[in-house]
Length: 603
Image 1 (cartoon, rainbow, N blue to C red):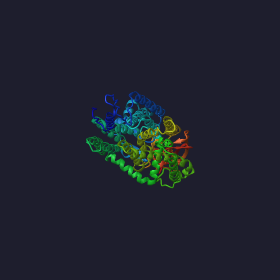
Image 2: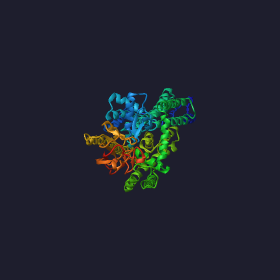
Image 3: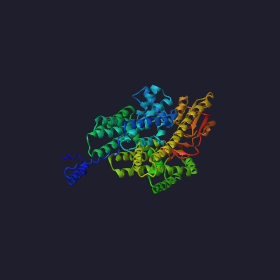
Image 4: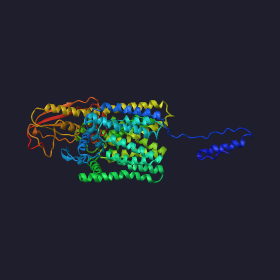
C-alpha cells in the first residue's frame, strides 16, 4: 500500500489511488499519478539573476547620484556638517557648541531636532576623506546604495518583480533629492529597511542572531532620525499577527527601548534636557504655531506623498480603471483649487500676505500641479488599502502599516509636512506597486515589462529634473556668497549677513559674520547681505541704509523645490503646498546694504 501522505494537500491524490485500485483490471499495471504540488507564491530567485540585479541597481544608483556629488551644502546640511566637525574634536559632546540661529546666539542642542548618528558618520568621512562637498556626498552615497539594495532583498519576499520595486524606490523625487544631501533621512531609511529584513528573516528562520541584529538596527535608525523608533510598534504588530502569539522574540525589541532610554538620560546630563522628548515637544509646538487646519494637513500630505512617490501617479492608468482614474482626478482638482485659491486654511506661510497674493496670480499653474500630486497621493493610499483588503496577511499588514503610519506622521504629527518625513514610505510603496503589477500581468492588454519601463522612465526623468533644480538652487547660494565677498572685499568695513542654510555656511567660510539682531555689533560702513529666499530674515530700517545694491542669480531649470510664489516647499510646507513646482522660477535675489550708523541698530 502507498505510504500515508503527511500533508492535507496529498489527500485528493490518495483518494484517486483508491478509485484506480478498484477499477483497474487484475494484473494490469497501474500508473500512479504524481501528487500535485503548489509552488510558493513568491519564487526563489537564482543567485546569478540576483547578482546581476544587484550590479544593475548599484550602477543605476551611482549614475543617478554621481552628477550631484559636487552640489553645495543646502538647507540643514550645514547643521549636520557643523555637528560632524564638533564630533571630530569632541566625540562625546556632539552638540556642545553655539551658533547664530533664529537671529541670535543659541546652543546647538536647542536648534537641532535630530539625533547625532548621521553626524558621527559625516565626521568619519571628514576625518578620512576631507570636508569637501564631493567627499561628503560620495560618502553619503553608500547609505543610499544600501537602501536600494536592501529594498531589492526585502522585495524578494513579497513580489516576483523585486527589481521593479527597487527601481521604483530609487527613481522618485523624494529619494533622489534627499540622497543628494548630507542629512540623516536616507541613512535612517537604509537602516530601517535592513532592520525589517533581519526581523522578517529572523522570525521565519528562528534565528536569534538575526533578531538581535534587527534590535540594534532599530536603535541605530532611531539614533539617526527619531522617526526610526516607529519600527518598534511596527515590527511588534507584524510579529504578533505572523506568529499569532506573543513570543520570546518580543524581548529583542527591548534592545532599542533600552538604548533610547540611555540616550535620553545621556543627553539630559549633557545639555540639561533629553533630546528625544525635546524633539517631540518641538514638533507639537510648531504644529500649534503654524495653525494649519486638519483638512489642509490631509490635502498637503496627499500632495507631498503623491509628488515624492511619483510612480504612484504615473502607474495609475495601468492599475486603475478609467472611471476610477477620472473620479480621482475630479476630486483632486476640487481639492487643488481650494488650496490654490486659499479656501482652505494653510496656516502660517512664509512671506504672508504678499506671497499669497503672488500665488493667486499663478493659481491655475499651481492648481494643475496640485491636482496631479494629490491624485498621486490618492492612488498611493488606494493601492495600499486595496492590497491589504484582498490579502489580509501579515506581510501585507506590514507594508500597509509602514505606509499609513508614515503618512499619518508626516501629515498630522510632525512639525510640518515635508518630503523628508514622507520619504520612509517610498520603499514600501515600491514593493506594493510591484505586487500589483504581478497580479495584473496576466490580464494586461499589453506587455507588462513595457508598462513598468514607462512608469520608471517617466518617474526617473522627472525625479532627475527635480534633483537638478534643487542642486542649482543650492549652488546659487554658494555662488552668491562668493560674489558678495568679491563685491565687498577691500571696501572697508566688515561683512555681515542674515539667513541660514547653505548661504550661512559659505558666508562664514569666507569670513563673514552672522547678524545677531539681539546683540548687533555692526558699525558705520559695514555691509549686510540679505537673501530673499531664505529663513529668519528681518528688514533693515531705512534710516540705517546708506548705499544698496542687488545681486541677482537666474535659475535655468524651470523647476524648484523652494519657491514661495509658486507654492513649492520640499523641506517645509509653510513654503507652499507642493513638494516641487515646474514653471517660470524667479531669480535668486540678494540685497547688499552698506550701513550708515551702528551703535543704535539695525533694529
